[in-house]
Figure 1 (cartoon, rainbow, N blue to C red):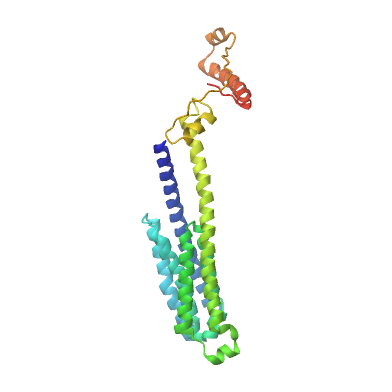
Figure 2: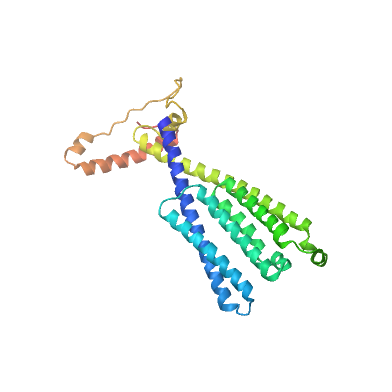
Length: 288
Protein backbone atom coordinates (compact mmCIF):
# COMPACT_ATOMS: atom_id res chain seq x y z
CA UNK A 1 0.00 0.00 0.00
CA UNK A 2 2.89 2.37 0.72
CA UNK A 3 4.17 1.74 -2.79
CA UNK A 4 0.70 2.44 -4.20
CA UNK A 5 0.51 5.73 -2.29
CA UNK A 6 3.96 6.68 -3.57
CA UNK A 7 2.94 5.90 -7.13
CA UNK A 8 -0.15 8.08 -6.70
CA UNK A 9 1.96 10.99 -5.55
CA UNK A 10 4.38 10.51 -8.43
CA UNK A 11 1.56 10.38 -10.96
CA UNK A 12 -0.03 13.50 -9.47
CA UNK A 13 3.30 15.34 -9.50
CA UNK A 14 3.94 14.37 -13.12
CA UNK A 15 0.46 15.44 -14.17
CA UNK A 16 0.81 18.81 -12.43
CA UNK A 17 4.22 19.40 -13.97
CA UNK A 18 2.91 18.60 -17.45
CA UNK A 19 -0.13 20.80 -16.88
CA UNK A 20 2.04 23.67 -15.65
CA UNK A 21 4.38 23.42 -18.63
CA UNK A 22 1.49 23.36 -21.07
CA UNK A 23 -0.24 26.29 -19.35
CA UNK A 24 2.90 28.41 -19.24
CA UNK A 25 3.67 27.78 -22.90
CA UNK A 26 0.13 28.69 -23.91
CA UNK A 27 0.29 31.77 -21.68
CA UNK A 28 3.51 32.93 -23.35
CA UNK A 29 2.09 32.39 -26.83
CA UNK A 30 -1.14 34.22 -25.96
CA UNK A 31 0.74 37.23 -24.64
CA UNK A 32 3.01 37.17 -27.68
CA UNK A 33 -0.03 37.13 -29.97
CA UNK A 34 -1.68 39.96 -28.01
CA UNK A 35 1.46 42.08 -28.21
CA UNK A 36 1.93 41.60 -31.95
CA UNK A 37 -1.79 41.96 -32.74
CA UNK A 38 -2.11 45.14 -30.68
CA UNK A 39 1.02 46.59 -32.22
CA UNK A 40 -0.29 45.76 -35.70
CA UNK A 41 -3.56 47.56 -34.94
CA UNK A 42 -1.61 50.52 -33.57
CA UNK A 43 0.53 50.80 -36.70
CA UNK A 44 -2.41 50.33 -39.07
CA UNK A 45 -5.11 52.45 -37.46
CA UNK A 46 -3.36 55.06 -35.32
CA UNK A 47 -1.30 57.02 -37.83
CA UNK A 48 -1.53 60.44 -36.20
CA UNK A 49 0.55 59.77 -33.12
CA UNK A 50 3.59 61.55 -31.78
CA UNK A 51 6.93 60.10 -32.90
CA UNK A 52 7.99 59.78 -29.27
CA UNK A 53 4.99 57.62 -28.35
CA UNK A 54 5.41 55.50 -31.48
CA UNK A 55 9.09 55.00 -30.66
CA UNK A 56 8.29 54.04 -27.05
CA UNK A 57 5.67 51.50 -28.08
CA UNK A 58 7.99 49.98 -30.66
CA UNK A 59 10.72 49.68 -28.03
CA UNK A 60 8.31 47.99 -25.60
CA UNK A 61 7.28 45.45 -28.26
CA UNK A 62 10.91 44.86 -29.25
CA UNK A 63 11.80 44.04 -25.64
CA UNK A 64 8.83 41.96 -24.54
CA UNK A 65 7.83 39.97 -27.65
CA UNK A 66 11.20 38.16 -28.00
CA UNK A 67 11.19 37.45 -24.24
CA UNK A 68 7.83 35.67 -24.39
CA UNK A 69 8.82 33.87 -27.60
CA UNK A 70 12.09 32.65 -26.05
CA UNK A 71 10.34 31.48 -22.89
CA UNK A 72 7.75 29.54 -24.94
CA UNK A 73 10.51 27.94 -27.00
CA UNK A 74 12.43 26.87 -23.88
CA UNK A 75 9.31 25.25 -22.40
CA UNK A 76 8.42 23.59 -25.70
CA UNK A 77 11.93 22.11 -25.89
CA UNK A 78 11.28 20.31 -22.59
CA UNK A 79 13.31 22.51 -20.26
CA UNK A 80 10.40 23.60 -18.11
CA UNK A 81 11.06 24.26 -14.43
CA UNK A 82 8.50 25.53 -11.89
CA UNK A 83 10.36 28.81 -11.38
CA UNK A 84 9.72 29.70 -15.02
CA UNK A 85 6.07 30.42 -14.20
CA UNK A 86 7.24 33.14 -11.81
CA UNK A 87 9.48 34.56 -14.53
CA UNK A 88 6.55 34.47 -16.95
CA UNK A 89 4.31 36.27 -14.46
CA UNK A 90 7.03 38.85 -13.78
CA UNK A 91 7.31 39.53 -17.51
CA UNK A 92 3.54 39.96 -17.79
CA UNK A 93 3.41 42.44 -14.90
CA UNK A 94 6.45 44.30 -16.20
CA UNK A 95 4.84 44.55 -19.65
CA UNK A 96 1.94 46.40 -18.04
CA UNK A 97 4.36 48.65 -16.13
CA UNK A 98 6.24 49.36 -19.34
CA UNK A 99 3.03 50.42 -21.09
CA UNK A 100 2.23 52.79 -18.21
CA UNK A 101 5.77 54.17 -18.24
CA UNK A 102 5.78 54.91 -21.96
CA UNK A 103 2.30 56.44 -21.75
CA UNK A 104 3.56 58.74 -19.01
CA UNK A 105 6.66 59.75 -20.95
CA UNK A 106 4.64 60.56 -24.06
CA UNK A 107 1.34 61.88 -22.69
CA UNK A 108 1.94 62.74 -19.06
CA UNK A 109 1.00 61.11 -15.73
CA UNK A 110 -2.68 62.00 -15.91
CA UNK A 111 -3.09 60.14 -19.19
CA UNK A 112 -0.99 57.18 -18.00
CA UNK A 113 -3.06 56.70 -14.84
CA UNK A 114 -6.41 57.15 -16.60
CA UNK A 115 -5.72 54.99 -19.67
CA UNK A 116 -6.14 51.23 -20.11
CA UNK A 117 -2.71 49.79 -19.09
CA UNK A 118 -3.25 49.96 -15.27
CA UNK A 119 -6.19 47.57 -15.71
CA UNK A 120 -3.69 45.06 -17.07
CA UNK A 121 -2.38 44.48 -13.54
CA UNK A 122 -5.76 43.13 -12.48
CA UNK A 123 -5.93 40.88 -15.55
CA UNK A 124 -2.51 39.36 -14.89
CA UNK A 125 -3.28 38.74 -11.23
CA UNK A 126 -6.66 37.13 -11.91
CA UNK A 127 -5.26 34.80 -14.59
CA UNK A 128 -2.76 33.33 -12.13
CA UNK A 129 -5.63 31.62 -10.26
CA UNK A 130 -6.13 29.25 -13.19
CA UNK A 131 -2.52 28.09 -13.03
CA UNK A 132 -3.17 26.19 -9.77
CA UNK A 133 -0.27 27.72 -7.83
CA UNK A 134 -1.48 29.63 -4.74
CA UNK A 135 1.77 31.52 -4.18
CA UNK A 136 1.87 32.62 -7.80
CA UNK A 137 -1.21 34.80 -7.28
CA UNK A 138 0.34 36.38 -4.20
CA UNK A 139 3.59 36.91 -6.12
CA UNK A 140 1.72 38.62 -8.98
CA UNK A 141 -0.15 40.87 -6.54
CA UNK A 142 3.04 41.88 -4.74
CA UNK A 143 4.96 42.60 -7.96
CA UNK A 144 2.06 44.54 -9.49
CA UNK A 145 1.64 46.63 -6.32
CA UNK A 146 5.37 47.30 -5.99
CA UNK A 147 5.90 48.27 -9.63
CA UNK A 148 2.81 50.48 -9.72
CA UNK A 149 3.80 52.25 -6.49
CA UNK A 150 7.38 52.77 -7.71
CA UNK A 151 6.10 54.15 -11.02
CA UNK A 152 3.83 56.58 -9.21
CA UNK A 153 6.47 57.81 -6.77
CA UNK A 154 9.49 58.08 -9.08
CA UNK A 155 8.15 58.43 -12.62
CA UNK A 156 4.55 59.60 -12.77
CA UNK A 157 4.69 61.84 -9.68
CA UNK A 158 1.79 64.12 -10.67
CA UNK A 159 2.08 67.77 -9.69
CA UNK A 160 -0.09 69.33 -6.93
CA UNK A 161 -1.99 71.25 -9.61
CA UNK A 162 -2.84 68.04 -11.48
CA UNK A 163 -3.94 66.32 -8.27
CA UNK A 164 -6.12 69.31 -7.36
CA UNK A 165 -7.70 69.22 -10.81
CA UNK A 166 -8.03 65.40 -10.92
CA UNK A 167 -8.39 64.02 -7.35
CA UNK A 168 -7.99 60.43 -8.57
CA UNK A 169 -4.30 61.21 -9.23
CA UNK A 170 -3.67 61.71 -5.51
CA UNK A 171 -1.45 59.46 -3.41
CA UNK A 172 -4.36 58.24 -1.29
CA UNK A 173 -6.21 56.89 -4.34
CA UNK A 174 -3.01 55.34 -5.65
CA UNK A 175 -2.41 53.66 -2.30
CA UNK A 176 -5.95 52.25 -2.46
CA UNK A 177 -5.11 50.78 -5.87
CA UNK A 178 -1.93 49.25 -4.47
CA UNK A 179 -3.89 47.62 -1.64
CA UNK A 180 -6.47 46.43 -4.19
CA UNK A 181 -3.79 44.72 -6.29
CA UNK A 182 -2.40 43.06 -3.16
CA UNK A 183 -5.87 41.90 -2.16
CA UNK A 184 -6.53 40.53 -5.62
CA UNK A 185 -3.27 38.56 -5.39
CA UNK A 186 -4.36 37.00 -2.09
CA UNK A 187 -7.81 36.17 -3.49
CA UNK A 188 -6.25 34.65 -6.60
CA UNK A 189 -3.99 32.54 -4.38
CA UNK A 190 -6.92 31.27 -2.33
CA UNK A 191 -8.88 30.47 -5.50
CA UNK A 192 -5.89 28.61 -6.94
CA UNK A 193 -5.53 26.59 -3.72
CA UNK A 194 -9.21 25.61 -3.77
CA UNK A 195 -9.11 24.69 -7.45
CA UNK A 196 -5.88 22.74 -7.02
CA UNK A 197 -7.36 20.84 -4.07
CA UNK A 198 -10.46 19.96 -6.06
CA UNK A 199 -8.44 18.69 -9.02
CA UNK A 200 -6.10 16.78 -6.70
CA UNK A 201 -8.99 14.99 -5.03
CA UNK A 202 -10.59 14.22 -8.39
CA UNK A 203 -7.36 12.87 -9.86
CA UNK A 204 -6.54 10.89 -6.72
CA UNK A 205 -10.01 9.35 -6.76
CA UNK A 206 -9.71 8.36 -10.41
CA UNK A 207 -6.24 6.85 -9.95
CA UNK A 208 -7.34 5.08 -6.80
CA UNK A 209 -10.34 3.55 -8.55
CA UNK A 210 -8.18 2.42 -11.45
CA UNK A 211 -5.63 0.88 -9.09
CA UNK A 212 -8.32 -0.91 -7.10
CA UNK A 213 -9.86 -2.29 -10.26
CA UNK A 214 -6.51 -3.40 -11.59
CA UNK A 215 -5.15 -4.90 -8.38
CA UNK A 216 -8.16 -6.48 -6.70
CA UNK A 217 -11.18 -6.30 -8.97
CA UNK A 218 -10.60 -9.76 -10.42
CA UNK A 219 -10.47 -11.51 -7.04
CA UNK A 220 -12.53 -9.73 -4.38
CA UNK A 221 -15.41 -7.28 -4.15
CA UNK A 222 -14.86 -3.56 -4.48
CA UNK A 223 -15.90 -2.93 -0.86
CA UNK A 224 -13.23 -5.31 0.44
CA UNK A 225 -10.64 -3.80 -1.90
CA UNK A 226 -11.41 -0.31 -0.62
CA UNK A 227 -11.11 -1.48 2.99
CA UNK A 228 -7.73 -3.03 2.24
CA UNK A 229 -6.56 0.11 0.50
CA UNK A 230 -7.73 2.34 3.37
CA UNK A 231 -5.47 0.49 5.80
CA UNK A 232 -1.87 1.65 5.70
CA UNK A 233 -0.53 -1.91 6.06
CA UNK A 234 -2.96 -3.38 3.53
CA UNK A 235 -4.75 -5.53 6.09
CA UNK A 236 -8.30 -6.05 7.30
CA UNK A 237 -8.82 -6.30 11.03
CA UNK A 238 -10.26 -9.62 12.17
CA UNK A 239 -13.83 -9.44 13.37
CA UNK A 240 -16.83 -11.65 13.96
CA UNK A 241 -19.88 -11.20 11.79
CA UNK A 242 -23.01 -13.08 10.85
CA UNK A 243 -22.87 -14.17 7.21
CA UNK A 244 -24.58 -16.53 4.81
CA UNK A 245 -22.45 -18.54 2.40
CA UNK A 246 -24.08 -19.86 -0.74
CA UNK A 247 -22.39 -22.34 -3.04
CA UNK A 248 -23.80 -22.22 -6.55
CA UNK A 249 -23.64 -24.84 -9.26
CA UNK A 250 -24.90 -24.67 -12.81
CA UNK A 251 -27.01 -27.70 -13.58
CA UNK A 252 -25.85 -29.55 -16.69
CA UNK A 253 -22.73 -27.43 -17.08
CA UNK A 254 -20.47 -30.38 -17.84
CA UNK A 255 -22.70 -31.70 -20.61
CA UNK A 256 -23.22 -28.17 -21.90
CA UNK A 257 -19.52 -27.34 -22.13
CA UNK A 258 -18.55 -30.70 -23.67
CA UNK A 259 -19.52 -29.77 -27.23
CA UNK A 260 -19.13 -25.97 -26.97
CA UNK A 261 -16.18 -23.80 -27.92
CA UNK A 262 -14.30 -21.91 -25.19
CA UNK A 263 -15.80 -18.66 -26.50
CA UNK A 264 -19.35 -20.00 -26.17
CA UNK A 265 -18.69 -21.25 -22.63
CA UNK A 266 -17.18 -17.90 -21.62
CA UNK A 267 -20.16 -15.99 -23.06
CA UNK A 268 -22.59 -18.18 -21.11
CA UNK A 269 -20.64 -17.75 -17.86
CA UNK A 270 -20.39 -14.00 -18.35
CA UNK A 271 -24.13 -13.79 -18.77
CA UNK A 272 -24.68 -15.95 -15.68
CA UNK A 273 -22.35 -13.92 -13.49
CA UNK A 274 -23.75 -10.61 -14.74
CA UNK A 275 -27.12 -11.60 -13.27
CA UNK A 276 -25.80 -13.27 -10.12
CA UNK A 277 -23.27 -10.57 -9.20
CA UNK A 278 -25.85 -7.83 -9.66
CA UNK A 279 -28.34 -9.56 -7.36
CA UNK A 280 -25.79 -10.47 -4.69
CA UNK A 281 -24.09 -7.06 -4.54
CA UNK A 282 -27.45 -5.30 -4.41
CA UNK A 283 -28.04 -7.10 -1.08
CA UNK A 284 -24.59 -6.21 0.24
CA UNK A 285 -22.97 -9.54 -0.57
CA UNK A 286 -19.99 -10.47 -2.65
CA UNK A 287 -19.19 -13.12 -5.25
CA UNK A 288 -15.86 -14.88 -5.08
